[in-house]
Image 1 (cartoon, one colour):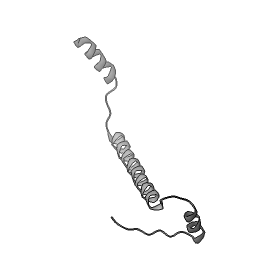
Image 2 (cartoon, rainbow, N blue to C red):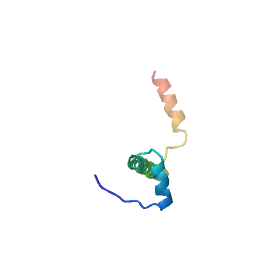
Image 3 (cartoon, rainbow, N blue to C red):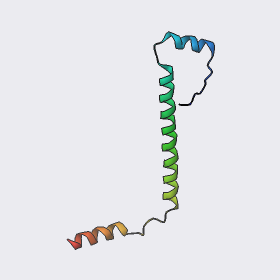
Image 4 (spheres, rainbow, N blue to C red):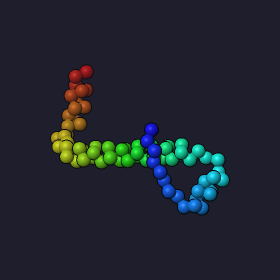
Length: 73
């Protein structure tokens, strides 16, 4: 496991000691969640770009497909 260092003001460090929180675990969870959020955002942007670049379907395609499906039954 890699090690990172975070600097906080002295008053923040003093307040951190006053509360019963596992700060290492809390920060690990936050970093993991933040990475997941950024990956989701990036994937959404990629999907939107693909949709924008797509040609789409011809006008009336949906109605035609439904009609063909109904007629085949």
